Length: 259
Image (cartoon, rainbow, N blue to C red; front, side):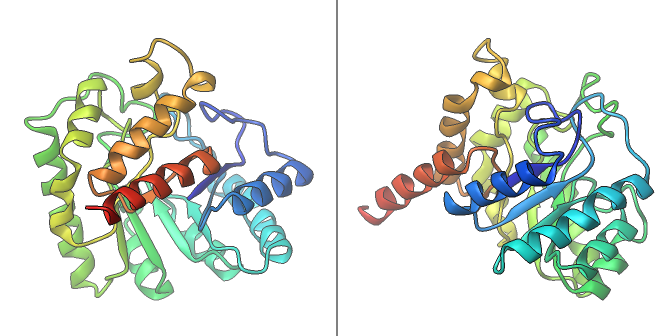
């Protein structure tokens, strides 16, 4: 899953793809490098970020989804949104997946909308919201607490006959450095749900803070985390750098075949 942020203030690539030419070039690059899904977002969810309006989010997303669907025939588009209205309008113009960082917490209509749309739904764990989530997050046991969160969410969704689900433990969303690495270490525990596991740690602070660098210099660290994630059960990698992630997948898949 290649990340396509159409935002001004994303932590790594904010403002890079805000015109048609750069948007198309980056999408083509990611698809050529092996991305199966393009995850498009109009709203930053970096720590401390402020939400944009629903109207603004739609104004950014809709024309760009239409553009990408017209330029790339077989593209699979995931939309990074927690708003049910945005999800609905984006699916109408060609989006196939909704990637909800709040797992329905921020919009009570999201589950019913997903049921009606009958699309794949990614549910992520987050403690708090993007503005406040890194203000001293606390857990009794981070992995177990997230498992309990998913148990409740999946039960509600299955009750509504929503079965096409992906789970994302939410690296960096209301977790400190130790929390993030504890989740990575115990990622296999999430296999109990028998659902695809998405890992989105690309160039995040769990990498660059530990390595005492910055997002721009966190590619090698991202590849290491992606490799560990695959070995521990991840099925989807949400990344800025598709070529390097595909290489991680190829090597780990080959390793698994030789067991």
